[in-house]
Length: 64
Image (cartoon, rainbow, N blue to C red; front, side):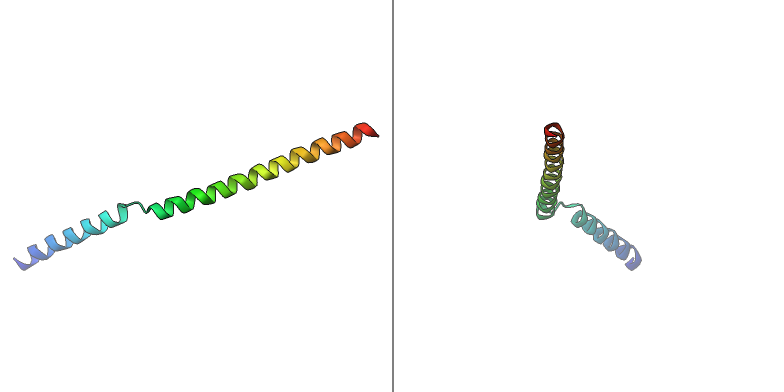
């Protein structure tokens, strides 16, 4: 009987640990979203700088 009871207790503890692991931490999600926004801003700045540089070089070439 004790062995059966131990198995049931082990299964219950496994279920509880799975429930804890399956929960979503909002702080982590918010942190990931902020990091993604930072990356997106940096990428947009880099693309804008490249486009502006291309226009400036093209303008300089036209004036020569």
